[in-house]
Image (cartoon, rainbow, N blue to C red; front, top):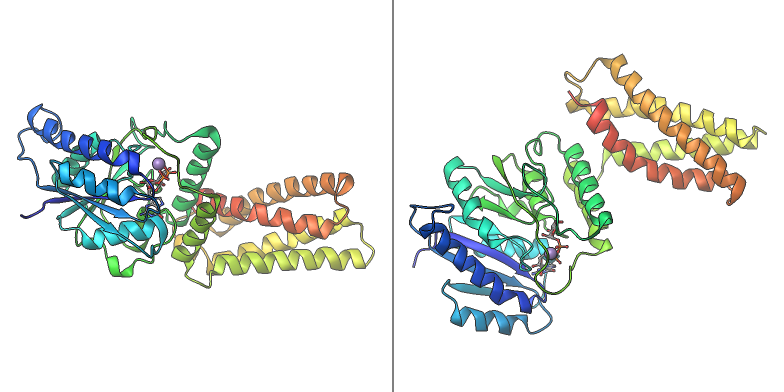
Length: 369
Ligand code: GDD
Ligand code: MN
């Protein structure tokens, strides 16, 4: 049998969700074709479901049970030595997919199966390389993202990603989604180095692809608990940096040099008998100017074109970094007077926090054309 569409579903201990997912997928294609929904009037495509399973419980047995009873053909790759986490599982699925279009979706029903024919119709109509199901466009919604904190983290990390890839992610409101369709052959699978949770981000960051978005509402989990961890979040930041700069990130190097210089000036002036507050102010002003000049040359060189003039960028950069440094100095003063009587230590910690905040600002404001 030839397969038109492969639905890749990564699973890690999702037993109670498997039957419901396959049932709703089968129904989605069926109803879509005969009830005038998406895909009305089209022949029902030949769909296979491919579970890429890293479970440590009895999920594989459940998948086999469902496969035997399902209207849709169901395959499973069970990985005994899982590699690359969720992203690695998705890539293994993309490699093994028989269909011309490959849908990637979670196994916990937070991605509504009824959306799959909609995404495929968009893929067919537009011919796009990738169709992204987005929570942050049109009528999309992140509803099922539990808790204010995770919503905020999701938004902030999306913003960070778009700041680092302003061109490739220009039309992508939700680079963090785990729900998308790719055209088999469009993505260079051999070039991927999957790690962590955000495989779509890696796919979009490595290549220039034609991307179209379709809004969707992120639902509640059907059963079980999320497998996302804080470690995944840290891996994400590492992943972004590696994708953007390679191993020797000029931005990180300049940032680190600036921090060292800042702390050296602070310590040096204090050693000369200067009070720590004026010392901090001098350290900040000097490093702001030097950082700006280095970044112009080494970090944002490819984005300078058309982004204000040199002095325009300098004034904006200085206004922001100066304000940020002033806030940081107040915080430093507050902390040193109250709790931690070590200006250098407090300054080091504050610089680290400010580093990430500053990068986002530069990409979004200073270097925006
Ligand atoms: N094979 C495999 N291996 N599957 C995994 C692994 C793994 O190591 N870790 C998680 N999964 C599977 C889960 O079983 C589930 O089917 C899917 O990946 C998503 O995992 P969840 O635990 O439900 O993650 P989430 O809901 O917190 O995160 C989802 O939403 C995020 C958007 O906020 C994922 O789709 C993320 O990719 C997405 O960024
Ligand atoms: Mn989930």
